[in-house]
Length: 401
Image (cartoon, rainbow, N blue to C red):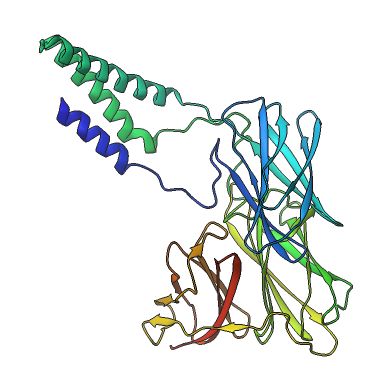
């Protein structure tokens, strides 16, 4: 019997499922990164195990900032509202969640505001989970009872073996059994929603170098033409927006604010004129990821960058990358790595002509593996957080045929 229980314990450990950056489980914290005032801030909405309960909202940032955010929580089920405020690095605000289901959190700092749609999910145990737990409990009680009474009766041993067998069988079948829908979950929609169609615009229409402007992306459903308002949080943001000058000298990786259904906007400043390329990484619920690209023009004289660009000399394996084959990029960090967007590092690679963009992640050290589709010159940027600041380092790669 001891061997059976030990085997069951090892199986539990071996079947543990790793956390996925694009899935928020019931009861888990939701982390949403947004760009406010040219700062990357992450709102953390703590998970709850039951309702009603206080919903604790805090805000974090890699770079030091004194931004204060006004909060408004609105239930989409009954329209009830509550308000509060929170500062970066300070204790959370507690906003009452009276029930599970859909909510909107409106966050405002100065004249910038964003609305974050989300769901309060409460974990629910599936019937087969309760049966498995019950079988393990019965097994444990029978084993303990046999030890305390020094009994080895066939009935006791047979009962313990049978309950252990049921528990282990359910555990092995667990990955193939349907999970219980958490309380407050959205109805399961048909997978394979149409791709979103994206249109970029700037305000003003002709941004000037050194001056602040707003870059807006409007998303519509490819089938219905309606605003796309079903983006899921993946790698701690509903959308990852990469903006580069055509020559690659200017690089921005930002996380736009949701200002209306299907509308994402972010404020930028760039130091040089010319054509800029924009790439938004999005993922619709119950569907796949998508890259929405576009371009815009900036006018005016060139100006110096506020932060000089940092270059890097990476180690490539193989040293001469080949198109269509994996290449590993390794880079040394300047200090201890801090998680940012759920990872220790991010590598963004753009083909020189702008036709291809790739985004890879490092799980621990700054080590990335990716495949580039065609020969040519590629522009690359590695980003990581250390010592309370976000570091961006650039380099180029030549890919052979």
